[in-house]
Image 1 (spheres, rainbow, N blue to C red):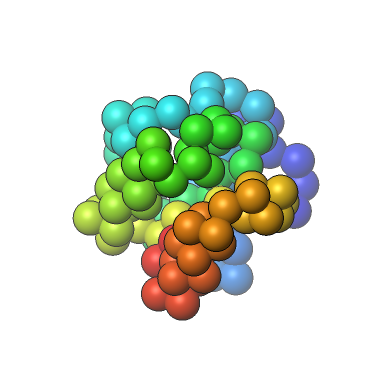
Image 2 (cartoon, rainbow, N blue to C red):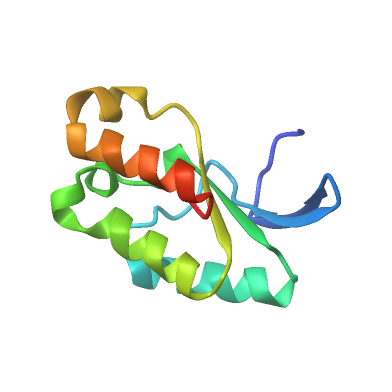
Length: 110
């Protein structure tokens, strides 16, 4: 996949996907993804790909509830969320995050 310089829709294996650029406003709360979900709807995207660079460290600290709130927002709008990048350091530091990732993978929506 070529380097993305802006949040843009694309088709991957016949599926409409909104791919976020690695650089840009960081998503710090569920309110921050509202416009992103709106854009995904406008472009008929089934998936939104957010690079790990666009997420704050607080996203990966489940006690902040940011990850759960953002994930739930995507579930509510029936858009799949993909967090793209290496989060192994965060997972190694948190058993609860490891469980969240495992459960998210199992359900297939995030």
